[in-house]
Image 1 (cartoon, rainbow, N blue to C red):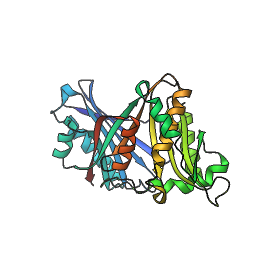
Image 2: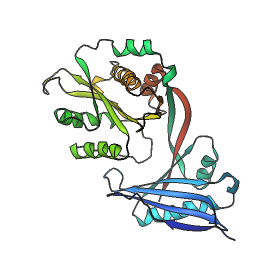
Image 3: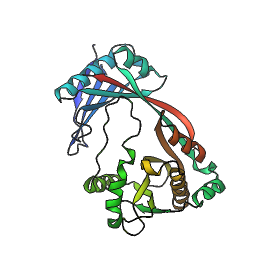
Image 4: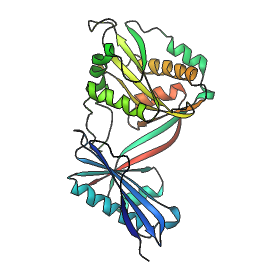
Length: 296
């Protein structure tokens, strides 16, 4: 019998975001699936992001092409101009996407810090190294009210991170978006912790915020935690602030979550300064993920 696609209903639909799902099956047996995500965020209105999987035993039989065609048609119907799909470098997904006319536009280098092997003495030395004119501050969950405006002002530190030709635009953060992002992490039972750098200056006690790094820890405190955003405002780069605040965050999370196994991060291959920071902290490369683009 021919391969049949069935559209499924997303049980986790959220305001301003949609996920369309297709299941590929043959003789009632699932052989592949596709997830297409779209968002109404200003920086994502032109994008559709695709996750496509075909069982290894069922590849090269047209299943992937059927799923990709369905997703591309849905993206066009949603007035999206760019379709993005990710796959592991060197895997079968790369050959498939390239053969279907997509082009590689970004490579992310993933790395992991095994906490049991982290160099505590080196982390302590880095975290306690003086940085005149700056001080560290940390919080859990939603940013405190007294730091909110300063955190909003610091978020553009990530605006110039390398994104290749993905079409990703700079995210415009405001107070509501920051609160919503923290609430989303809490709603799924995980723990968001943030460490930031304040500089001496006129922006209230402690000065303005010039750098930040976020980490999400699984709700049960086990497994691997995931780094989210890390940024340093351009005028304060080259002073060791990224390594300083990340070292302090690593030490703190080890104390608070002793059963945690590791920390995960991914960085654009062209973001050499941040990759060097992670390497100095003990992060080890694990794999590389490629993003492919189809102009619709």
